[in-house]
Image 1 (cartoon, rainbow, N blue to C red):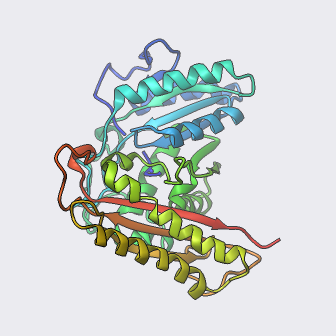
Image 2: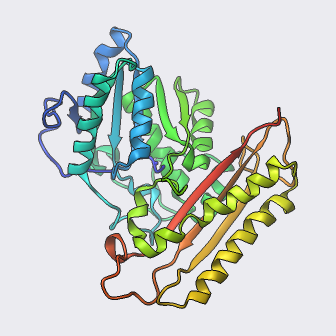
Image 3: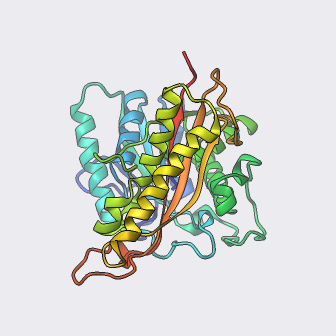
Length: 359
C-alpha cells in the first residue's frame, strides 16, 4: 500500500495523542481512540483532512504524495503500518525495511518545507503508527488463502495480474485501507500511479461501499534513469540496480508503438518483449560474475477501468500498459560487491504507463 497500503515503528508512549515527532508539531497517534479524538474537532471546524497511507521506508515518491495532499487540504495524516495481510506466506515480511527514525526525520524536514511554502493549504498534522493488535482487534487472521476472518475482497480486478501471482495481496490491501478510511475519515486519500492496479481496486472499494472519499492518484516518481521509486529498491544492490530499468524500457517501447499509431496488442507487447529478451541475452553473455538474471511475470495491455486484458486499445478510453519482473539474486558475487539490503534477495519490480485516449 505503493505502493502497499501502509510501516510500523517501535512501540513508544501510551498512544494518548500527546506524543510528537521531535522538534515539530506533528502528532504521533498510535491508537484508534487517539486518532478519533484528534479528528473530531476538524470535522466541527470544517477543516479538510487528507490521508497518505504508507508502509514506511519513505522515499521521494511518498513525499511527493504528502506535498500534493498539503497543497489541497488543511491537515495531512500519514499512516505508517506494515500490513502483514498484504504479504504471502513465503514473501518478504520479516525483512521488509523498517526505518522509523529516518521516516520521522523525513516527515519533520518536509513539514518545515511546507511551512515555508506559501502555496500550501495545510501541513503534516499527524502520523498514525498503529500496531497489528490495534489494526486487527480480533487477532490477525493469517496470510493463507483460506484464512478465516473479516476481509474486504474486490473481484474480479483483485484476481488479475498482481492478484494472480499474489492471491492474498489485494485482499490485504482492501481490508487495511477500509480500516484506515474508517479510522481517519479523510475527505481525500492519495496514492501513486506506480501501483496502478491498487488504485483501480481502491476506486472500486470507494464506489461499491459508497465511501465519501475522493481518490487522488499522483504520477509515478522516478529516478533519473526512469526506475520507479519503491521501498524495495534497497534490496537491489549496484549490479542489479543498473539493469532494473529494463521493465520501464520495455513498457516505453510499447508506448512508442502506440504513439506511432499502433493499437493492437501484438505489436505493442511484441515491442516490449523484444526489449526484455534482448537485455536477458546480453546479461547472460556477461557470465555469472558480471551479469544479472530476471524473470518476467507478466506484460499487460489492459482496460483502464477493469484491468481486463484487451486485444485492441479503445481510442476513446486508452489503456494501461503494466508489467512485473523478478530480479533474481546475483549468482556469483564479487568480493566487496554491494548486493543490497538483506544480502540481495529476489526483488519483484512493477511498473506501468498510462496510454491516454486519442485526442
